[in-house]
Image (cartoon, rainbow, N blue to C red):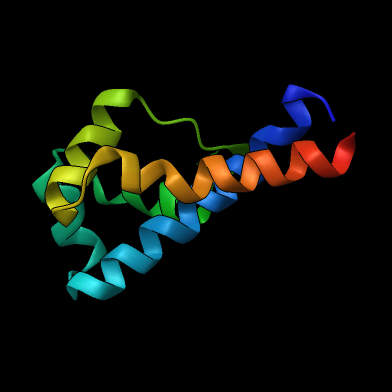
Length: 96
């Protein structure tokens, strides 16, 4: 599987992780976005796994955004991306 083909898988895994963390904290999308210093629309796109709805391109947030989100959720950055890394590894193993 190519890197490009993995991008949507990684974006969906991140989206699922963000939705789960937000549900655990009971925060609204707007509250998370404000606390992380991003727009509500940007956060909604991340939870959808997208960076652009019109183009359907997968989310690819900056490291600083991920750090800010992990701070908002009170979780280490490593935990935030753990599911993403696990999903990518699983996909890579299946492809070989």
